[in-house]
Image (cartoon, rainbow over all chains, first blue to last red; front, side, top):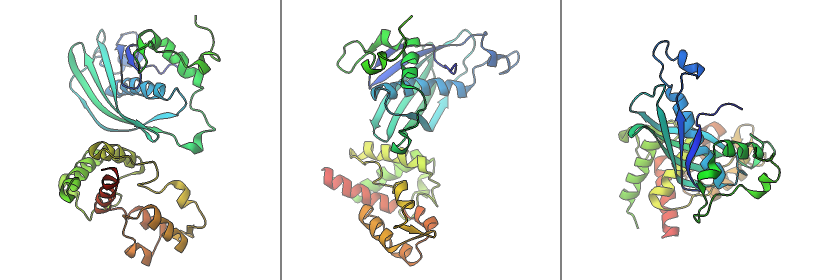
Length: 175
Length: 131
């Protein structure tokens, strides 16, 4: 899967908040159509990055056992454009999380400037979907490793965030 | 303990935020689905906001009947809710007024039952239990 709209985590406080960055590069194909001669990152892809930041935060809280899906965006506001050479910093905070799903508030900053704000409702797919998988649990682990979550992550008690033992045993060894 | 007026104000705010409707549209008699345009995913959003606003817990399935009700042959037959079904609704959602619905209990009309007033009554009982 190559649908990565964040490049790495710079903070990951389990169950509370996470920060990730997105570097915008002229090497990205879509920028040359959006728009020709005036490349700006589409707001929908910024929303996807914010949702990925929040979604992985919610997923990790449940040790990747729950199927977390983006269900609703009640509100999103954009304050400015994001252009090649910019680095967007996404911050996602969990407002509420329980068996039904989670409510997350997220912001995008372009340098120090607030670039976007978004409210996200994630749903946990219910029991009838338990026999079907969205991703293999080990895929989540690989994503988290690639995004360097475990280099910066901290568990609820402040100790370094650890990979879930049951998944690390199954996933391929680290490079 | 919040007053009925305070409960209504907070429920109104939650619905305005979740459904994107104007305050004036959120009257006690307005139905969530029919008048305010709520869809199934909106109920999760509404639950989160109510839990936060009133510091209560609303377990899944308590506010809106789960899929298992509508697909159960004992409760729904030929697009109509049976007597057993009506009893089940009264038990699981005691804050909903079923008198009108009971006269012609079609499944389509059921989804449109829940009013803002019902929601307020539901919140009041949850707050009373919690407080």
